[in-house]
Length: 136
View (spheres, rainbow, N blue to C red):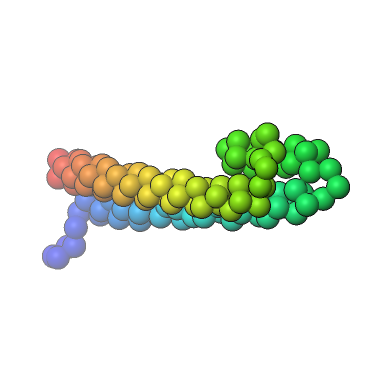
């Protein structure tokens, strides 16, 4: 058996390699899910503000805006009570909303970087432990 690892060590190495791929895959899967959320939320809110702009020029703006309130979420505060110049209020809220979502995206990116660093350290410790068990 010159040049080959003993059977016990071979299974340990296969387990280590499988866990390396699994950990990287899980981190990538989570990052793929979480990273674009602020963008999706901003697009949905922008559409709600577009709908609010149409609603304020409709026959009954108060009722129409009330129906949009759940979709407007924290942007609703800028439109209730109905301002004197709703077009300007919606334009100002659009700018403020984009700033909030940029801050949310930056926070998400920071948390993703921290998560990747922590998982990398944990994977290194786990790998070292597996390698240690394989030597015994």
